[in-house]
Image (cartoon, rainbow, N blue to C red; front, side, top):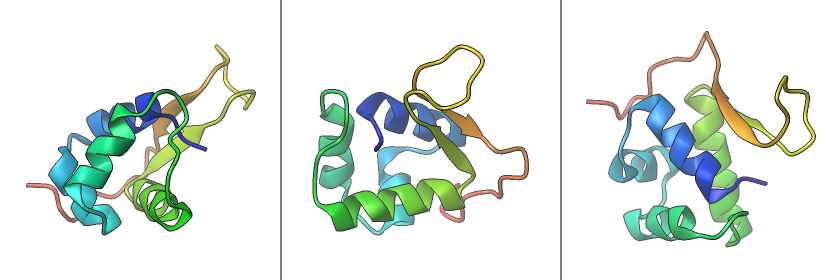
Length: 90
């Protein structure tokens, strides 16, 4: 599961806009906008969510789920140190 806040934070860590994320995930910009406007956990088409998570993972984003090992607890995102540059970056 991914929250709208995690999605926005992941995009900020990557330094990409909604259009670039849509391109990386193979989704439309309105779909990304709806996901980011969601309250808490993103709900939607399972295929779209899987594409989104795969794109974030491929770009080096690690999603931290509720209750996962983290020094401060809570949900979050982390950029892996060996992350490759997203192909769609300017």
